[in-house]
Every structure is written in C-alpha cells, then in structure tokens.
Length: 191
View 1: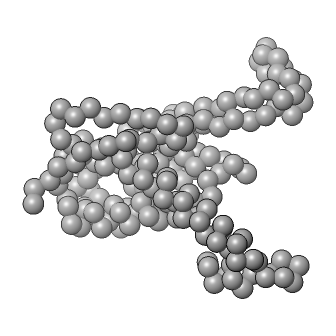
View 2: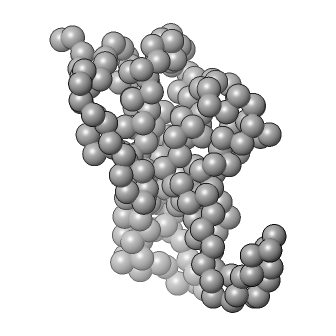
C-alpha cells in the first residue's frame, strides 16, 4: 500500500511526503486503537467460554470468522451521531435542521431478525460480516481491514503459544469510553 501511495498521482502530481505520512499514521492508529480495544472483549469471552477457545485452538483457520462474530457481539462503536439536514417529523418527534440524532448502531448487531440467537457466539454465522461494528457509510472506520487482520493474527498466534488462560479471580472488569475499551484485563496462565 505504501508503494502505491508513493507512486500515486493526483492531477499528474505526486502526493507530498506529508500527505503520505498522514495516510500511513491514520491507518496505523485506526487499526491499533480498534485492535487494542477489541482484544479485551475477545480475551474476556474466550477466558469465560472454554468451548469457543478450544474450537479456535483446534481450527486456527477459523480466526477471521471468529473475529467477525466477536465484532458483532462486542462492537466498540456503540452509537453514531447524524445532523438533521431538513425539518421533518419522525414518528411524532419533530426534528429541526441542525439537530443531532444519536443512533444506537451497536443494537443492530443483536437484532434477531438479522442475526438469529443474537446473544450467542456462533462461529460460521451467516451474514456475520454485515455487522455495524465499524460504523457504516462515509463514517465507516478507516482502519477496519487492518484491525480485522491484526485481530485474526493475534487469535492464531496467541493460542498457538498460550492455549489455556483465565481471568484472575476477584478482579473487577470495567468498560469505559466513547469507544468501548477495558482499561485492564488481568489474565493468568501456567508457565
């Protein structure tokens, strides 16, 4: 991708070094932030659901499908704001131009009309990649493809080295932030 950026031309002119660095930093940070946040929820789930962990260990090629199901179940972006463009009435609620409407997009990932048995982790779920974990439309996460790849690599590589782990007993787990994240996840395993 960097080679393509270096070779890219806009109106016959190459991209500036500053623009190339900005694109690279944006992609790197977007993928890193999402990956870090998602891993807390993924490892919490796998520490608490041994049958799911055993399946991923036995079939590491399922890592990309597992990532999609984890993103569906534990989306990091839970809402998105949109500005009303023209006055209108939405089911009896008057909306004026300039109002901001907050959409609970994370709830769409648990819609039983789209995802049967939505509260259950199901590897190989049909249509799972149609989740809204990374937003939608022009507001879709720029680093989503990198994040998906990073998460699949972590699932395969971690479990090849540390297949058995648990959450340290008695430690409270917390979530915080506009993008959900777990500040700490104290995992334990035998050495």
